Image (cartoon, rainbow, N blue to C red; front, side, top):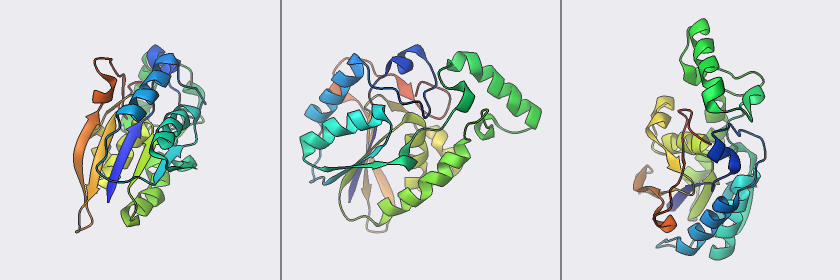
Length: 214
């Protein structure tokens, strides 16, 4: 079984370094071009029948273009949403990042475990992803998952049977592709890492759990 994990295309808030979280920001003109380039240049040695996507617009717009190209079913899943940044959504990471650092110090915990006011922790995103990851482990069909920088990093950590901290090892560019193969023993092997070659020389902003643009 082949699995492709893809991050959404660029948005205006990506470009401005603003936390998007659950705020439903559409792709900007560059992001729409990236989505079209992703679909036109998508390479897979296998037939793909399903494209799963976060229900947020920036992901579903990216996924729709790809699903149309592949003639695959498009399936929206709320658990593939990015982390909610609560009251910090719309603010720049540069502005609220120090506040998260201070909250972590005050609480005696790592920044990864801090809860933004009215938001989620990364651990909560990890927990809501686990049932979906288990579905992928048992799926026979080849599929694509279109999600977000932070959520995609957590999903990758689960797929390779890593720990929660393993998510910090992954980073996605806009429309970056991770290709994995499920081996007979049941584990996933990474075949491609953050492939943005379909964008040519165009730059892709990065996204991860480490406070970069999502």
